[in-house]
Amino acid sequence: MYVPKHFAGEDRAAMDAVIRDNPFGLLVGALDGSPYATHLPFLLDGDRLLAHFARANPHWKSIDGKTEMLAVFSGPHAYVSPRWYEAQQAVPTWNYAAVHVYGAPRVIDDPVAVRDLLDRLVGEYEGDAWSLDGQEADFTDRMSRAIVAFEMPIDRIEGKFKLSQNRPAEDRKRVADELDAGGFADLARLMRDMAPDE
Image 1 (tube, rainbow, N blue to C red):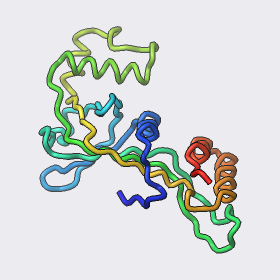
Image 2 (image 1 turned 45 degrees about the vertical axis):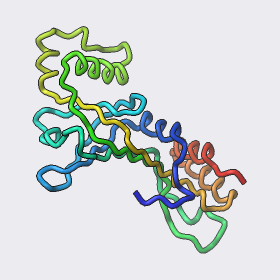
Image 3 (image 1 turned 90 degrees about the vertical axis):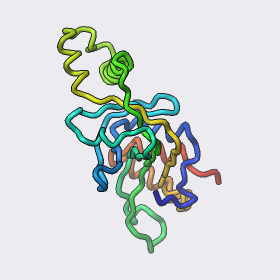
């Protein structure tokens, strides 16, 4: 990913927060010599990502525990108008946060570990409202066999936080205020939280 120095994400906690807040990522690898991508919900677990494919998706067949893949997470983002700057000569742009995670995924074969992953994913999104424990065993066994679970160790992580850091403080404040007013409160908050020290 192209990351100019003033947009580089060097705070691991901030990058982890982008993943946790935007867990529906894009796993990019290769299949039969061509780029191949799958959109998946991920669970960040320390220094690894957990997820699963539908078994019918051929992407899982390229997982060997050695070949690097890329998981992409897009955080809050929005258009930034040049009207919001004090300077008259400016161009439109886009503010955003993105995190790229690199690692060599490994298939999880152990049925107990697969069930644990599914329980954790369901718990993440359902809380106590619904669980696999309330389902018939035959149904959950069939559903478990229809997926391929995997873990992806985080070998390398890079973040890009393009949040108007290259603009004067007054411009950054104005952009954040406009984003707030336009319904992009998450991006405005991120801009304020990550504002460079003056």
